[in-house]
Length: 130
Image (cartoon, rainbow, N blue to C red; front, side, top):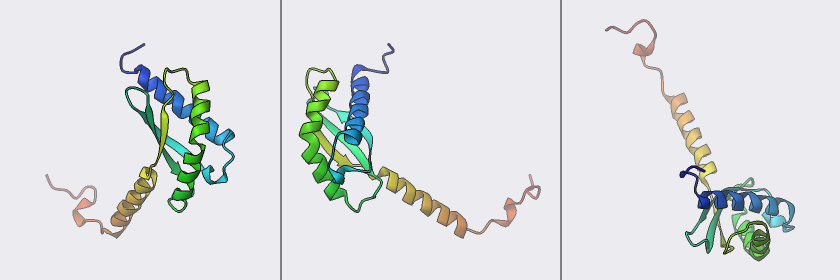
C-alpha cells in the first residue's frame, strides 16, 4: 500500500460512505432528507469527526437539518461503530458546507462579467501585428 494513502484516509472514506448509506436508508427524520456528505475530517485519535454536508434545499432549512442530524447522531455513531472497525468510534459533529453554492454564485458572477464586457477590437484573429 502506498504511503500517500494512509490508514486515516481509508478510515475517513469508509466513515463517509457508511454515514451516507445510514442517512439515506436508516434515518427516518424528514428534516434530514436531501443532503449530501461532502467531506469528513477526523482527529488523529479518532475521537471526533467533522462531517461536512450540503443540502439540495439550499440554506433555507439548514437549522432544521442540523437539529435532525444532531438528534440522529447517537444512532449514527452506534451504527458506525458496528460497521467500521476502529478502536474509538468518533463523536460526530455536523457542519454545513456552502462551497457548492459559493461556487455556483462565483460562476454566475464570472459569466455576468464576461457577458457585460465588450470584446476588444484587437482580439480579432489575423489582425495582430508582431
